[in-house]
Image (cartoon, rainbow, N blue to C red; front, side, top):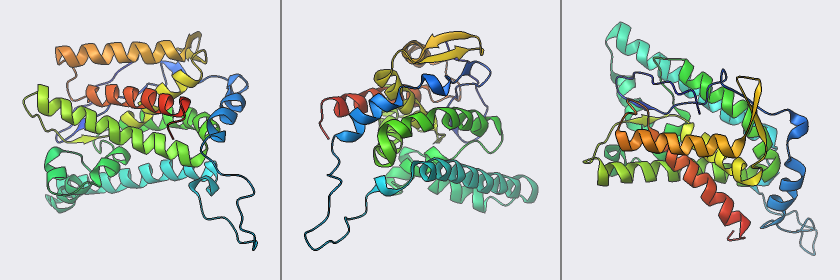
Length: 271
């Protein structure tokens, strides 16, 4: 179903992207954001009159951050980290100075080794880090995020979107790492990329608006539920056959599971 590219990395597993050459996002007029935004935003948010009798302003909420700010901030952070990573690689290749690459591996690459060393922030920083030897890694992830994130933000608002995106990415990473430890003889490759977080976003959309259409090769309409279901089946097959190469197929599976789990928790008003 998905055009999956395997990128050779010397030190990292790069999560595979949805290719822009394969799927085109739906027309904006077809996005069901109004109905679903009312459903998902209404639960768990305080009253609009959330002020004290003395007229004090309500406390700050992540929902006070404009969705456009969240959107461009995530893109900007990814770009900045990529620039730093590319520069560190140049220092290594040209000047034979590994200092910055080692620092990046310690602070922006996810592994059990880093977690055991107390560097838990790599659960978050790794999802903003991409291959510094192949620009297509960040371009494909950026393309998917650029077209799919706005409708998710419109449905959820800033706070819940960040919970889905970052929380889904973290949950996916933990699922993938636990599987490797238990079923793959404790494999501990470095992992980077936003694909797990993006898959959690896509699987949420597939649950919230399963009939939303994506265009296969820009021509053939395909419902998003079929895209996500096909991705899950394909990634599961590759994981079982261990044909993923440098691709973190487990991260993709974990992302899909996380997005579905988030939808169910919101659907049944767990939070």
